[in-house]
Image (cartoon, rainbow, N blue to C red):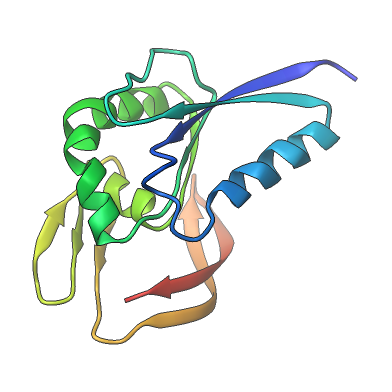
Length: 156
C-alpha cells in the first residue's frame, strides 16, 4: 500500500465545537489511518494565518451565535478569503453547522437580524420559529449528477 499523508487545518477548534465536533475530526483521522493515510491536524485559532498550499483538508465545526460572533471578524477579515482561495485551488472542507453558515452568503437569526457570511457557497440560512431536529435526506445536483445527502439537523 502506498504511504499517503494529509494535512488538516482545524478552524477555530476552541470556539466552533458545539456538538463535540472534534469527534468528527477524530473519526476522520481514525478512518484515514485504517487506510494507511497519516493525518496531521493543525489548529487554526483567531489570528493564525492560512498558509497557501499547506492544507489538503479543512474542518470547520459548529458554534452557537455567541461563538460565531467571537470568531466572525477574524474569519471575514483574515481567514475567510485565504480559505476560499485554498478551496478554489482544490482543498476539501467539511463544514458543520455554524462553519457551514459562515461559508454561505448569510445567516438570518430568528427575529430578522442578518449576519453576512463569506459568500463562497451560494447558500443562506434563515432561522425559523421552531427547532428542526432529526435525520434528513435531501437530493442535490453536483457536477451534473443527482446525489443524496444524509445528515442530522438540530437548528432553529
